[in-house]
Amino acid sequence: MKSEQYEAIIEGILFAVGESVEISRLAEALEVESEQVQKIVQKMVQQYRKEDRGIQIMEIDGAVQLCTKKELYEYLIRIAKQPKHHVLTDVLLETLSIIAYKQPITRLEVEKIRGVSCAHAVNKLMEYNLVCELGRLDAPGRPLLFGTTEEFLRCFGVQSIEELPVLNQDQVEEFRQQAEEEMNLKLGT
Image (cartoon, rainbow, N blue to C red; front, side):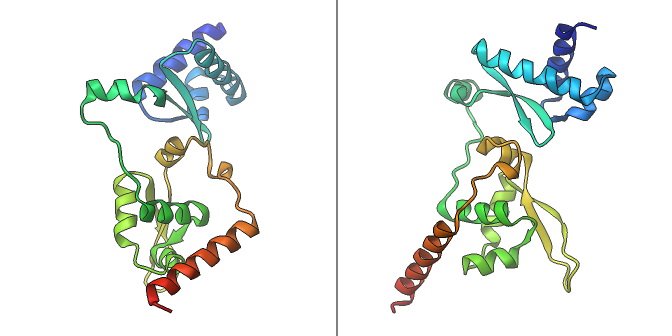
């Protein structure tokens, strides 16, 4: 089979499924090696960019998905009228970043880091499909473990959590000092 035929099949599958599909599953469907599918997908990604299309192929943690380019959101909402545009407040962003960097993590561990209850924030992030339950910790009470989702990766434009920016120790210390100063202001000391 020619490369163009494989591309058409992959494009058709991604369009029909509407969600991410693992490279290994595409390879099974095409009856070829995963490495060959990866090369075909990379070629398709470049073609979509070069041709300045309205859609793109996103790679997400060993899987690929056909998506509308974010630059076209404004036009999409004119048709959809009810876009899924979630506003992430500072509280939600802070909670999300803790979960993203420390996952799998329990709600209690997030609360220890933030210093306040985060039940509402975690529930909201789950509602937005940015965070999900990963299982339970093998400890008394068997608390839930949370981690990020594929939607999180899509929204933040990364293929895996390993691509998240690395904070250096100076930044961490600066953040810690800022948090302590905020706490002192709130406590009036």
